[in-house]
Amino acid sequence: MPHEEFLMRYRSAYGEIEREEKRITDFWNTNSILYIINNSPREKINQVSYYVDIGDDDYLYKGNSLFHIKLRDLDVSHEYRVRDGKHDGIYFNAAFNDALIFISNNFRSE
Image (tube, helix red, strand yellow):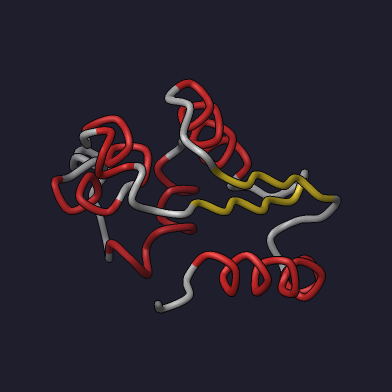
């Protein structure tokens, strides 16, 4: 990703990063679902209920798609939805009810 675009998207999370600085840091890896899935034992991966809901015009489509593919390759149960839309409030409002149903069905305390 070009440096200027990276800053536009992630400056609020990373602050000012110089062009020559590493973007992928230990902090990033600790919080990256793709890194976690690729580097965690299968038993730990299966302790989570996964729900991915992404718009077909969302700028985050690639990471979400790679995550879905990795879960499929590992035969990890998950829900994956692609709907018409982009990363905005209109999409969020349309997807919210289905997300709440998933959460309700998967995060009950016994």
